[in-house]
Amino acid sequence: MDDIDFPKELIAEFRSRGLEKNIKSHIYLINKGDWVKKVYLVLKGGLVVTYINPKNGDEKAINFFIPGFHALATICNAFLPGESSQYYLKTFTNTNVIEMDKSELDQLICMPEYANVFHQYSIRTLMEKNAMRTMLISLDSLEMLQYLKQKYPQLLNEVPSKYIANYLGITPQWLSKLKHEL
Image (cartoon, rainbow, N blue to C red; front, side, top):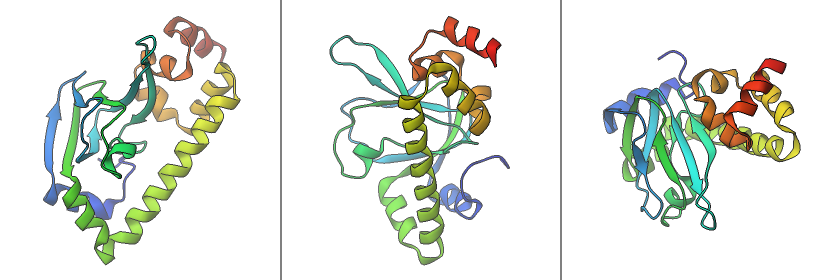
């Protein structure tokens, strides 16, 4: 648990307020249309957020959550404003999480001893995700793979290649070829 990308001060609080769960691979935690009232702290394994294109039905990986990279997972655009989700959140391997209700999280982030810690974590992950999206639209596949290898090697080590390829907009076969060029 030493490699969890989440403030150590908050992990014990999550354990005391949430429910630890072991979830099998390829289980959906959030479906499109769900009202999102849960947040998940990934302790082991990983989650992927996907979007289904309504025109052609293609599934697109758009975000990852693993212990060493943005371990706190939910569908933010549905969690915060209280709208239904446009995305899916699912496990890509057997995964251990702490599931917490939104009401518990709301109480936790208002506690003075945790508010700034949680705020700093949230800002840092938001900035990293925005930087990744900028790189994703600015770089070609090989350059993006090099960027991920340099900045976030844990993603390439822990997220299945089919999701990395999907995230990059290429086939798994092309990803394999690019990995050999690194």
